[in-house]
Length: 342
Image (cartoon, rainbow, N blue to C red; front, top):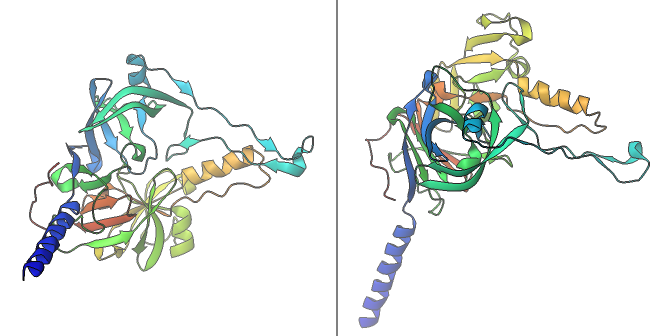
């Protein structure tokens, strides 16, 4: 009887320890400020200066406004360019080996050539020393406090909860039990995600029955489908019935149309309006390969669909980077719940 009691006590202790290990541990909780088109602005500290940054899961690197960096006395460093190598000396055409430099582009194809190092960077309770940021001139005079973009390199070592309806972003430790993360609702959908080397979130979404390679992008105000995918997958042209031109002409125009459904796991968005646009980044990457005269051009896959904030703000999401899973509920799912304790 004593032995059975001892075994029971051990089992209870192990069960309690296991439950403790499965608890979520919050690292930071951020109240977001609503930007135009539902974009998420988060407060950060750059070398002691309080600013706002756009939370952008579609950006693989953080970006700091160049003028703001200069005002702090931060240096602008050129990104080094790697030189091509040749396996057989004096016979370059027989032995060319592509050695592309590290290149960074914005979504519209603009190349970023400089970066800086921030001695002290804080977001919520997360502190970083010597944090690298790309430099670009993008300050918005209508939002003077907005001075940068918080890219995935700043948060992909954590799990990320996005609750746009509650204006809340939470960072969690990745040390928890797999699948035990949705604390705000009993029912949810989970999807496998792919991560690029730089942390870009890729997933498959189904638009009117067609599976599309998709990037989850909180930095995009609108969900967009590339004109090439619209043509190849749905047979749509810029003058097809139901296509509305918003601006521009031809391939450089911006168009809009309505689809029947956009589905991710068990969550469906009905009658979504989606913009049709030229994939400027894909065009720029292709031109870079042509200009470099690469004998064996590098094939870089860009997404067919960009999932923007017009759709994302209808959802409540938990991005588990280490698990490579995305957990989704509707924004209205579950009663308001307190963030798990630090």
